[in-house]
Length: 180
Length: 180
Figure 1: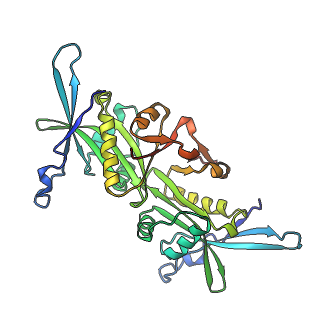
Figure 2: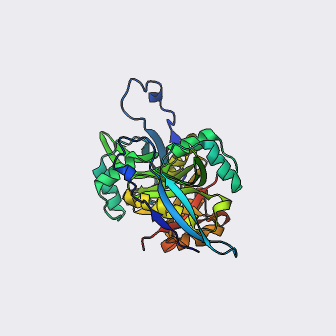
């Protein structure tokens, strides 16, 4: 997998954040090799922690990976009450496309739990999921959260292991309650 | 294990909740058999979801089960930002003693994660941990939370299984991030 890099990580907009209402975007550049055609391109994506997300964009993204539809009213509530929300965008000219999403719940002190990690199929296999997670982890660490947790489906356990996650450390088991 | 029962589950104070400032308590009665001495006693405990907790009481409770001390400033923040906090009390005359605690983080819509489940050693083995968890689950379900999760240490996995929790359902793994 090609290794991307962060650019403009601390953008100049931080200096005049009181005078601008547009949320800060952080750029991430992934070098990709053109398949057989020779020459290289780059993919540039942009990360944001703004919660001002078009819920239909988010629904379209989740549809693209085959998730079951959820009531937008509840999705809105979940986004509002998540501790951290990260969106990943491709920007071409004036067009912005939502290509990734993730969020975490937290007690704002010790624990965070990551939910709803999604990367659009067109953008998978390019290291962008890794970048998305690294961005979210960085944000959580910055807030002094020491315990970052998640529940991983079997096919993504290795993906998270590569990011530094350990499954069942010291025998701790993830458990889900089912009504009887 | 003896089976307790809820009493005054919908206490009369609900009817005049606008005229009283004291948080509602719900009573739980556990019949216990006196060891060999003949005759039966009951243990009555009281549950509350009020966040107005003396943090030194909570620290004392956590000390009693041997947990590492945590900065009270952070504990306070975690209690404030938990979605649901449940305390369990023994009341004798005018004396109130904190004998159990639990809390859950949530996105207020889909997912909740339970943290910091603790019952004072003097009150363990009487079904009170079970009552504490059932009370918390009831509260979460009332808020329409469908996915109730937790991370269980190996020695309490069976305790949670008895409550309806399933470990690693469909191969989903609990994972924790460790800094490299």
